[in-house]
Structure formats: C-alpha cells, structure tokens
Length: 161
Image (cartoon, rainbow, N blue to C red; front, side, top):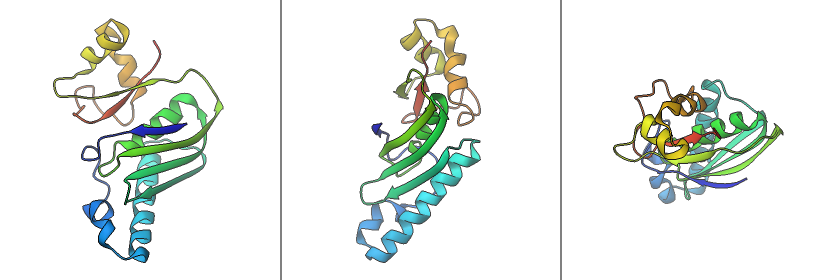
C-alpha cells in the first residue's frame, strides 16, 4: 500500500482537461461532480480491461491528480494490473493504493518507460535476459495489446522472474 507515481501527461485519455488542471478554477460542487465523473470513468476503464476487485472503489481528486483505489483483489497480479490501469490515465499523477489481496504473493516492481525502451531492453535490465520479455508482456495484458505498443511515461508491471 502507498502512493505510486505516474506521469500525468501520458496515458489513456478518459476525460478532458476540465477534470484535471482546470478544475481548480471551478466551483466546489462542479469540482465534486467532475471528480466523480473521472473516478467513474477510471473504474469503468479498469473493468473494461477484465479486471475487478471485490468492493472496488475508485475516486479521483482533480486538484492533486490522485486516484485512490480500494477493495480486495483476488491476487497480487490482479492488484498490480488494477493499479497500473488506474495510473496510466492522462491527468493522473499518483495512485493511492488501498487495495488488499485475498491470496498475497511477492509484489512486482514497476518500470516507467523512457524513449528508446522496448520490452527486450526492459527484460535485459530486470532479468539479465531480453528473451524473458514475454513475462513483462503477459504481466501487463490486457492493458498492452501488443509488445510493440509501449510509450514513454507508461508504467509497466515487472513480475518476479
């Protein structure tokens, strides 16, 4: 549990800038409505990835660009995928992890993609063997549709080898 950092300007475009930086100038009632809409959009995106947790709750604070995710995931890989799905959304800077896990196991590492990265290079960095890149791809499906479709600023789950 804790805060995971993401790059606010990278990721899925689920809601407009009004839900993000422009929100500070809106009335409190409007800000609350925008936050709820954004939180609901992120929760829907998580579920669209085929991910879910018991009592999944997703809230968004547009003034701080923080998503809070709570509930109980079935296992550690599902928890990590939920967190990465929530964080790899444009206008999200941090994810506050309040998820618990029914069947805990070793936690994965996270890697922020930089220009020039590919899964082979990332696998070489973490495993010493680029041929293990499929472990990273599988740990990030269904968010990754193709091993060639990663982008700078994206955060990937790096499972234990």
